[in-house]
Length: 234
Image (cartoon, rainbow, N blue to C red; front, side):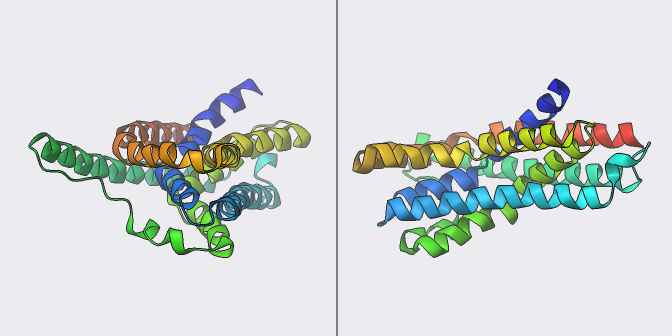
């Protein structure tokens, strides 16, 4: 079981460090109706994570992938596809980090310019709970990296050989850990109220500026892990 947990840790970190999710939840937390909006966003994010892992797990169970002596040919193909998604994600993150670096150079030269948040977040302050709930789901299931982490986690569990109950316990723990990057800021707002606005604003700026290269390294690690699994199952 410990080996399965070790394999799942980088996948959980891939979801935890999703910059779009963290920037998104902070934008929701700074909206006019922060409490209901943030709870709706969190509910959508949790549902997106549960649905992604649960549906994948059920599909793999229907395909009886765990009953074969040797994994079917499509299993290494899936690992290779996931490796490709993570590698492309690393490339996108690296390009973003270079843009942030250029902004830093401009600041050093005396040009004041703040890192721009993605355009999709500019109107979040106008969203109500319903749209924020849909946003939470969409940011998970439509984000190739987060969705790929969930698929890889379900595949790891289904091929683990562990009993069904243990697999579901681990899956539940995986979801709880994975959604913590959204749940913790929401809990912080529930506790601190209006006093949370300043630190949340600073957090959004820090994330937009400092986390890109760390995400690149993590995505490269995930790509290598999936590529290695593909080779091992060929």
